[in-house]
Length: 487
Image (cartoon, rainbow, N blue to C red; front, side, top):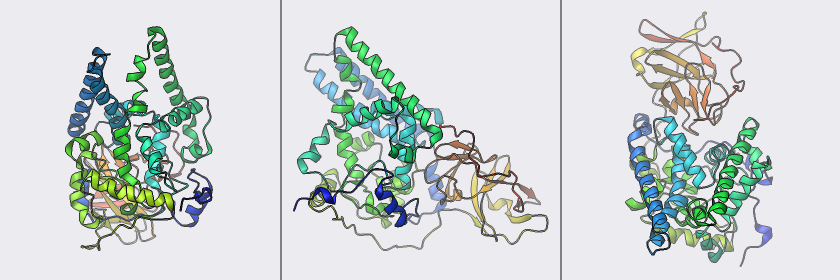
């Protein structure tokens, strides 16, 4: 029986479904996590410029090379295959570069992530700030209806004809472009205001206007040259070059469950051939990416090997995955309440904390200081969790120039402990959203972090680390910082 209009859910962010999600305890909730050795997780999270430079270098070489070939052979038969390759790299693989560099994990050098993120974002018509916040919410409340602005598989599912017609972005691209024009006029929807902090609204408008200005320049180029050829190379591929992004993007969540707190039930991992893995930058390991977004794309296959015993059976190929997806989409077209059942393995090993070090010292002395541990217990570049007797929890860091301590819970996620994070360049990166804080000052240094951490005095006495817990070193912690620089 066909689904009726009455059975449709409201997928708008901040709509009536959001209240239901709050009531069900699905908002900013605790998610399932696998057992993994914390030291191994730190190794996998390590940033390097080399793998990303190789990937991005090859990608841009192919993009520019195919574009030049299409341009110089225009109106010959060589134009067709060259333009097909160029448009696919532009409209589809640009999405993967935008995504990975948006997490700030591809390159170790932040400015390189910035550059590729901006270029990829322009190619797929996504402004930097609003889409950074959108993707942050996607990782906070993945496929939670009323909260996640990046849900693309709706209930009831479309018919097969309608679904496959999106292989060309005849609906999606105009909507994206229309949204940019609307924001350029200074208008944000209620849904956008729900996940973008007010302090960034002006930035969102300014970035939309930059996009419109570039498009206006492109239109002027077409008028002056009396030709639509420039549109074939810029903007146009965002319409006709998205077929691969559609094909591979469906692997992520299509046909899977909504409103669950287990990424194994709402995300999918698929084994792909090396060419597709390159074009998609390993996002076929999508369960792994959602579980540990701090792990760079090049390390996702190794992460998969570490935790695959706790994951549902991995689809063995694109064909194997689409057999499941099409079956689920057809079912959800007829019955929007139908859910795909995925077999979950029984844990084969005891749960392992993702925090490498946990200390539980006794009460503080009269001077407010507490003896935490021997200095050798914490290696340089390592972060430890310190649980105090008064139920406060602290993140303790050992850097090359000394020891530091901050409040333990990320001020953005409000649930995730920073002891499971990654220390890089004097900053601690939250394992949930890749937001960063300066370890010495507690100040946010990378969005979505925007509220400072509380800092505590820490020092070394007689080869032991002591922590001042009677009073904070920086009163007023928790007050929003004046600015939270973006990477």
